[in-house]
Image (tube, rainbow, N blue to C red; front, side):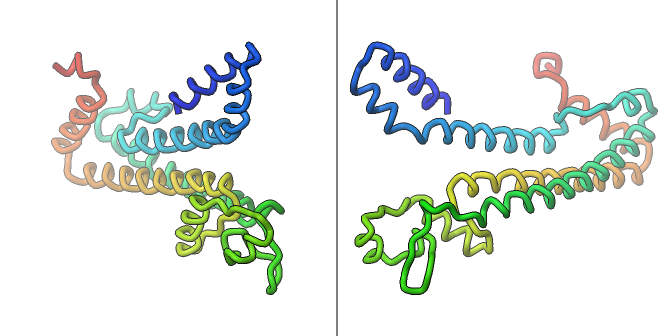
Length: 211
């Protein structure tokens, strides 16, 4: 993403000097802006999932910091379980929204065959040759995989949005596992609680301080 963005910035600067090949290249790279937007979306949600795994996501933890070890871990467990419920609700709602986009087929991805309208990826090569249409082969490949999983995908842009409900679902599983794990530690007694919290603090400590 950094390389594409940097290259695009360089080409745009060259177009200011009326360099024809730079203008042509910029036209050919119309896909870059969409790629960068979708890439930012993917990086954000993959990063959010890793943050929840390592318990480094943003959280308001004033009460747990002031509470004694046992109460702190109980609160931590409850927060994890409630966060799991919240992210499950987000997973369901975002999937419903993304599903609408996945099922919407714009006219540029539709062809009319003997059996009615169909997606350009599903059309026979002979039909496309007669219409002078070249199907997006990479998207058609991934679309076939998504269709095999029962997920409709009519456009590449909509397919990229699948990351949102998927990562919310992953985060829900992480929060649930953390909440249950914390509650299990509470049941093992005070010594296990203090050891667990100490290990958490060491893991969150910067490497320089840890040494």
